[in-house]
Image (cartoon, rainbow, N blue to C red; front, top):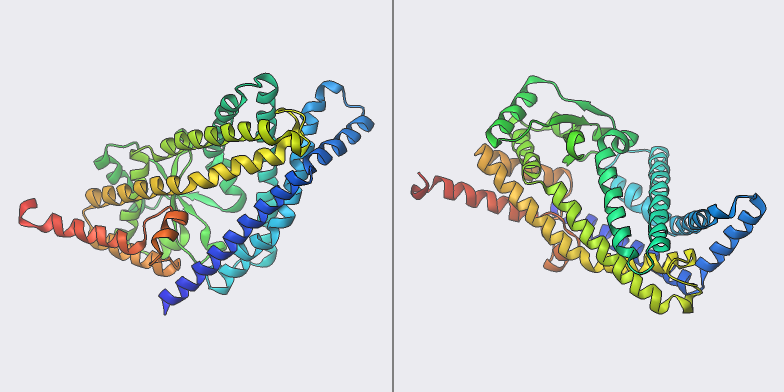
Length: 382
């Protein structure tokens, strides 16, 4: 019964996600085809002429105007899918108890934050275009990677607190276990924080967030309330593994490569097809819709490879947690409980896993733990 419910939930979620992606892509195609970028740039210039802003600021203001206009169009198209995926569907399947008003408030905050980041990113890209017309995509890629690193660093300090309460866990049972795990791993002790996920959701989760001095492990209040100390310890060990192996830094490096590749493709597309879309040159802000479309298409094509790398990291973290805690029973019970509580997609097709999943399927993770237990208890291992 639960498996059928989970299968239906994830099928509906995938369909809505694909529809949202298709509608966003269609909007960008329409914007390129209809030269909407040129229209947004022209409208911004009209406002600038009336504002009395010094001409030296016009390139920056035009980029901001086009970016804000494009973001507003994208938000108008994406809002129905965002409401369905973030509010209606999770409530229907008992995963969320957040009110419509609270969801809308969170969506507005996320949208405002996303708009600020988008404008800063666009300004950086077009500044690189104006300064280095031939190799702008290298400088812009490095700049966007730096921006991502800053956002990851600020995440626990600024971003997460906008949506959740984070409180450092000081209760001896959990804190002592983390200290002992870190000692055995030879790793620096991280802060462990209670994540108030239960205010909005009935799911349970854990995460490693932050960078450098802001790095910490988050355990949801739903997990702390309902899981045994041994189960929490093995989940802590899994998150500690991501720290030990430097998975956040590796993820940033991989993202830097992806960003550079996407911008290089966008450079080729802008030069070849920009004039037919009303774009005067690579650094013309009217080309922003075409830039986003080309870079987004490249990133979409690279997503399966990034998912495969993420699944590799998760399998390695699972193995590390088993080696460190030597408690496969707690690992298996924790995975089963998390799967049931979060309505995990336990039997995705190979294509679905390849396209969408950043974690291995739950049965594969459990089977790996059982194989580890069998190997650990065999005479050859004694």
